[in-house]
Image (tube, rainbow, N blue to C red; front, side, top):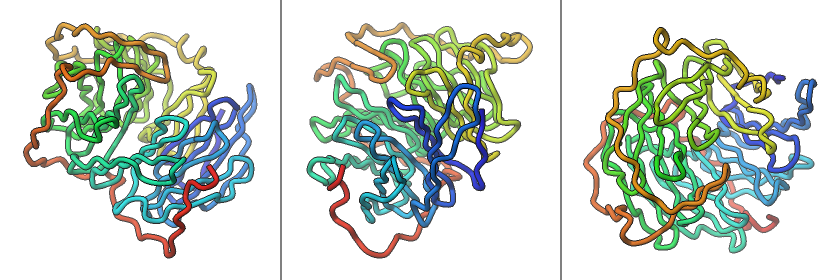
Length: 372
């Protein structure tokens, strides 16, 4: 199943309980689709949400509201039923917003092109936390519910652990040779996995973030997006347009799942029931793939298609964790080896292709979350 856009989509998000999927476009538009078995997605609305590129989209408030973040530095709340704007925060960041993630029912986080992360309390209608350790754009974020922390990757080549309880950056890795583009947590919370422009996948051991413990060289193109399937397996979206099934420890590309010709994959995600995998690409198409059919596909000949993982596997540290597919709960303590508050050296990482400061909209509406 697929739906064509007039412009390139940057992000997608599935509704938490209904057969709906939203996409955000480079021209600032927000689109909402309804999908069903055997039918092409039905476009319910397409609205001009922002004057500049709409880079991030997320359902919030149990799916009644859609949040979008833009290069115009604003965050918009739109009604799911009508697509009409509920409220807008014009100057949410000083720089273009590149990422938005949901933390809880009442908090969301946003990251911008200059490495700043802000946490928003929807009840108080205000920013309740700010972290600014990164020197370049925030490429991805994950909320670790059990320890109340945000893990973030950046174009400066570092991974950070941001503690919401203490309001401080608890740990930050050294600069890698590559930008870090994507992020998932695997192995029952013991491994943090990051994608890079070179195609290498970096693995960090939980609590030991100074440097990666493992490097997997299975991809030949940039690994732009990652999605966790289970504790042993993830799905990668790469710049060559191929979506792959990847095993972690042992590191192996198990099979190609789908493709967007040779167009780079911008974002992937699961439907609420995990029946469908959604993907958007530079071919301007939203594609919905049946997971049962994808996983039944043929295996690749790894000897012919893939290089061996150049890695020395570290012994996994013990961790008291409870994990499901949507949340990762990690025991938080002061002796978890993550109190790394030193300032890293300067980075020479290149800027993201998405990066570019957008012009801000005129006017200011302070009651952004009033109706959420």
